[in-house]
Amino acid sequence: MSDFIAAPQTVRLAMSEPGVFFPVRRIFCIGRNYADHAKEMGAPAEAIFFMKPAEALTQAARIDYPGATSDLHHEVEMVVALGEGGKPVASAVGIDLTRRDRQSEMKARSGPWEIAKAFEGSAPIGLLQKGLPPASGRIALAVNGETRQSADLSDMLIPVDGILAALSQYFELAAGDLIFTGTPAGVAALQPGDTAQAEIDGLPSFSLTVNKER
Ligand code: MN
Image 1 (cartoon, rainbow, N blue to C red):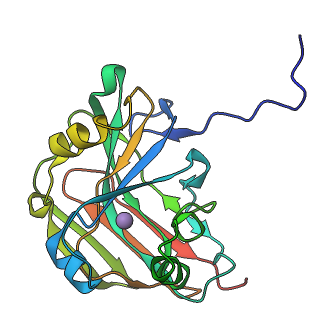
Image 2 (image 1 turned 90 degrees about the vertical axis):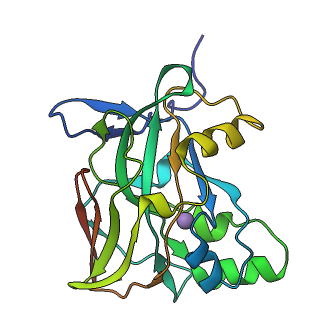
C-alpha cells in the first residue's frame, strides 16, 4: 500500500510547557458571543457557528497582509483546546482574522464565510496553557500600543460549557479540537506594519506584526 500523495502533516501548536505540543484536529468558532460586538456588527445577539481549517493556525510573530482584502479585521478571542472525550484541557489567546469586506459581501448574498474566515494564517494563536480555561478575567487587544478591544470573559453570552453543549448537538467533539469562543466589541482594521498585542488574564499573551511589504 502506498499513499498517492505525501500525507498532509498534522498541525501542532506549541504549549507554554517547553517541548510540549498540541496536535490539532478541527477549529470551531462561535460568532456573536458578546452582545456589544453583535451590536457593532448590526447583527442580532444570537450565536452562530463556523469553522476554520487547522492550517489557518499560526504561531509566527509576523504574517504577510493577506490577499483578496483591503479590510483585514482583528478579533481577539479565548481559544479552548479539547482533550479526551471533548473536555477542555488547555486554553490560549487567539485572533480570528477576518476579511471583513469579503464577509460583508457573503452576508449580503446569504453565502458561506470561508473566503473571509478560513484562509491560511487567519488564526494566529499564542502558547497553549494546560488546565481549565478561565471563566472570567480581562480579554484585550491593542494595536501599536492603543487599546482597541477590552472586555471580560464573563461577558460571553454563552460560556464555555454552553458552547460545548451547543456544538455537541451537531458534532462529536474530540481530542485535538479547538474552539474560538467569540470576540468582544472594538474589532477594526489592521494595516501593513501594525503590531497587535493580544492578552487574556492568566494566559500567555502574544504579539503579531503584519509585514509592511506585501
Ligand atoms: Mn470571531
